[in-house]
Length: 201
Image 1 (spheres, helix red, strand yellow):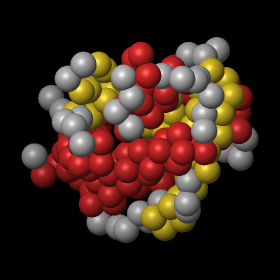
Image 2 (cartoon, rainbow, N blue to C red):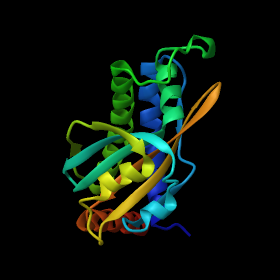
Image 3 (tube, rainbow, N blue to C red):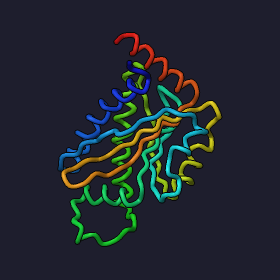
Image 4 (cartoon, one colour):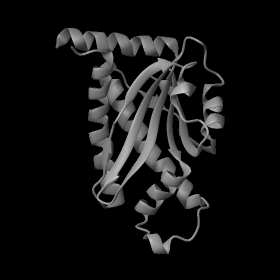
């Protein structure tokens, strides 16, 4: 029997297909965006679901229309460099540095923007709303520091949609994550839309 998470997985699959197509066009190679896992938890419980000790980078955008909250695209540092190298077709022997350049930051922001737009457009279709967000910001640090920054303005009744994202190309799989920090009303609206979708099945 299907439940709310099954509906959100289907929404995520639609978003992944669109994001994968857009990334394939930009990177000039076939990219599949997969969703191995998805969960919907309270903001207070979210840190327990995430390995917070790793160093990472994140692209964060505040939602302004349709639903209230924040969208977060997060990567471990090593996976961020893998995505940047894919973008510029850098081979293993040609890698020169593990320091992020301005071009590298721009690349991660662009990829994050594609992933966030795909997921938020799919959720907007489910809610029958237009979901828009402010230009994303780039931050780096431990996952713990990033999450603390993201959740600093959250309330106890807020929720997080946790989506594992895997960028799959012929030679590698690059893991990342997409998080939606949702105000209580936005979480309720999404759950109601899921329930309505379940009734229509």
